[in-house]
Image (tube, rainbow, N blue to C red):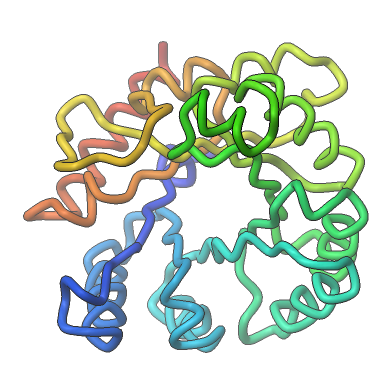
Length: 245
């Protein structure tokens, strides 16, 4: 895998801070333009709900691969319909997320509908959750919860997982889960500072790669940078050094 393929840039913009939904859409397109030719993947979430799946086609036209972070979570029949909407050739993303808690059946329906052209990643415990919050929701600690949800994803034929860097090594150590592709959000490059950071279980790009993550997701350290392209380049250098080591 090329170094650039390991980096997913989260294009998450608050419309209240950029002149409304139209302003957020403009920010996504401006970021996409800035990242053209770098080989990284762009992740879109809330803006898809405002602008629809046509945005995926728009980003493809700009030469970027797209991660549709939809976190699909419904009954299997509805998840199957959701996947059928995405499977349209104009809108098909390279990566899509589902919630592991939606059941192995729901995940399998999504994977069957999208086929090999789209990676289906099961979301485990959100990186904004600390131990008390995780216990309140799942009644178990983050590590135990992630392993339980990872097994559901495996049975559901998901291609991989979204999990914090803190649980990557644990999942990698379980032989039957070894084929799952692990993607870690909550990444903070060594040079980055995020004011009012809400992420609880974080790591540097190097730590995530060394622990066994295949890809990392970086948002605000890049999107809030004065020069996002330079921030991407610096992050790629961290990834490359970790892979080489």
